[in-house]
Image 1 (cartoon, rainbow, N blue to C red):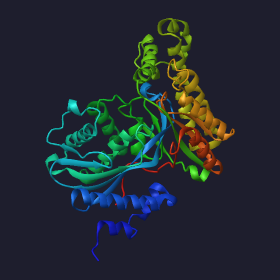
Image 2 (image 1 turned 135 degrees about the vertical axis):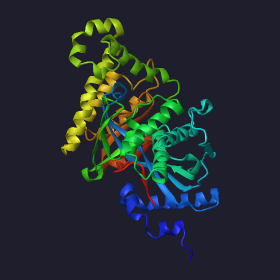
Image 3 (image 1 turned 45 degrees about the horizontal axis):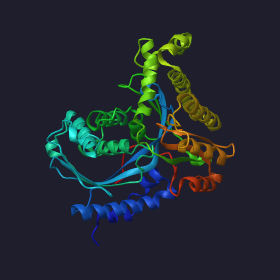
Image 4 (image 1 turned 90 degrees about the vertical axis):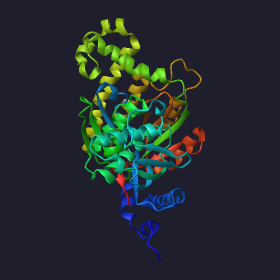
Length: 425
């Protein structure tokens, strides 16, 4: 019998890694995904892969819109991920075929940003490759073929783009750089690719969560040198599941809404001659409320109040988890959710009276939880997703109740994954 890549998976060589990433209950499904991916690679590229890599999506746990003000955030890697079957080709060319999408090809001979590639996967690949070229990787001798499959839903608030960046960075790091680039450095590589090549001015939280794994408490006082503390959290053992609920509220035409949050916080900062609210002591802000109000307006003040509150809550949430006080953590999550809705005002888009899908999603989640667990807006807000911590004994009824309103498949129950980018085999 020929010893093949697939037979290595079938023989149990990947079982320990899959249980580690996905939990014992989901390891068999993960093994089937790896086998299908291996077969797809052989069909597409005409040979067997040599490795399978994984990079996770992420969930924001605390610090809602605090990252762009150099504040504190709390985020976690989750067990929804992107898998890639990979084989080095030594040609300097990267070919990647994602399930349901055309093949993308990036020639690493040129690694400067390409205008027509903005907002594409090619831009992210070229951006990550450029960082490794700067570190000394000989791109003419690198390159790889990859077949990808993802269960990180696009537009779900789980950061499929950051997962993709960390996946590509992990492949380069493992194949061509001796696994010596740290998770935080990989995150910064991903952020640079998204900022400079993809054209999106994102913060660093998403990439850190996808790269570090577990729960990451991050202090962004100096974004160039973020302080990251990893916290282990097993929700199963605490009797809870983390659910991400797709409200199906569209992000279309909401660019100005998102930009207004950072813009109004920045206007408050400028009043004090600073760039970010993190640089303005809260006592100074409170002492000048009247003059700041005259200059920036009421909503800017409310959003600044949210920043000061949620920045402290993110720190307290991390401390609660480290101290094993999960009930205390849930109380803080509820407080953060109220601050986002009332002061940050990122749950209902301005002027919307009939279409309030995200607020309705949070309200129904709270009703179904019957005073247990916690629910809040997830991520950027306005459109998109909500988040709930659901007791396991009511998980089935919670999902059934939410999907009766939102539709089948709208609720994703996820595990917190202990590690970021990872080579499975």
